[in-house]
Every structure is written in C-alpha cells, then in structure tokens.
Image (cartoon, rainbow, N blue to C red; front, top):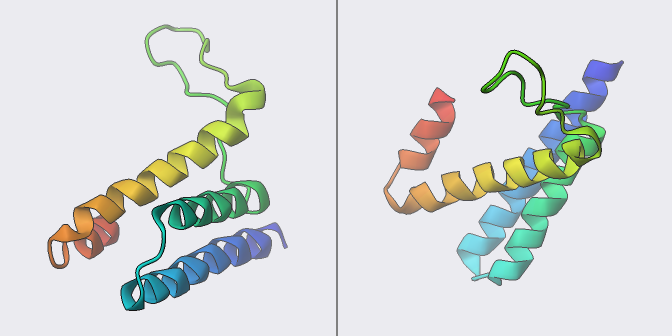
Length: 104
C-alpha cells in the first residue's frame, strides 16, 4: 500500500514535468514559473512520496552530528530542485541529459 503511494507520487511528478516540458518546447515559459513547478513537483515527491532523509550520516566524525531534524523536508526539496536544474542545464548537448539520467 505504501509503495503504491510512493509510485503514484513519483510518476505523477514525472508526468507533470513531461507535460510542462512539452509546453515549454512549444512556447517559451517564464523561468520563475518553471522554477515554482520544479518546487511543486519536488514537494510532491518528498512529502507524498516519502523520499526524504533525516541525517547526512557520519561525514567527518564517528558520531552523527549532521542530523537534519526539522530541516529534513526543506533540505530534500532543495536537493531535488537542484538535481532537476543540473540535469536541465546539461541538456544543451543532444542526448546528454537523457544519457546521464539513464545512467543514474
């Protein structure tokens, strides 16, 4: 049951991004509108899909001092938005973004 909710949130977000991408290719959308759409889709994936982390782990020490606590959800939303924009910026070359996404 939980897996179905996660899958639905993820596939809904992907479908929404695909639809907006098609509209953006046909007529140039405002950059702020695309940014808010990215934030909305990232929030959909993080909040309803449950794709968030609560700690960054043991980066430099043996203790877990990098617990995110209440910043877990905003941190993960920002990370997903940054990942989407990083892939979008590499899309200047034909097929580069698709190849990177397939490898990931």
